[in-house]
Length: 121
Picture: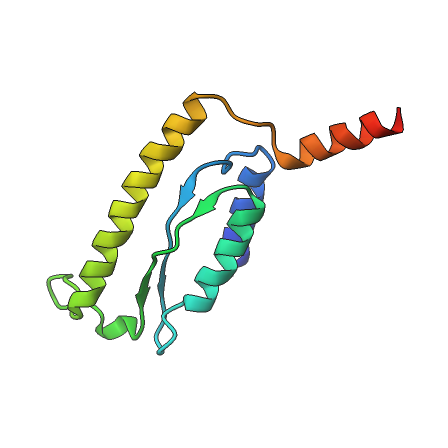
């Protein structure tokens, strides 16, 4: 993961700004992998930030051939994957927004500290 992206995530993480928010990922590469390992790494980081990484992603291998001259995907499945990802993101955004409006738990780390302090007397 690029250092600038990690720094940006860490900066927001400190404020718990990702808590209970959906996270969608699009990966691309010049080779066959399409950035799938970077997406997996990102998902782990967002779980730690108490975000909700979505299961469906968009993976674009051989990105230099992924779009035609007008910017449209050359592989029809790329468009399908993007549509699914956007539908999921819309659904999760709505669901989590309603859940947050009903009240949120404190971050797990803060609840654990409070429990440890209470146990010590």
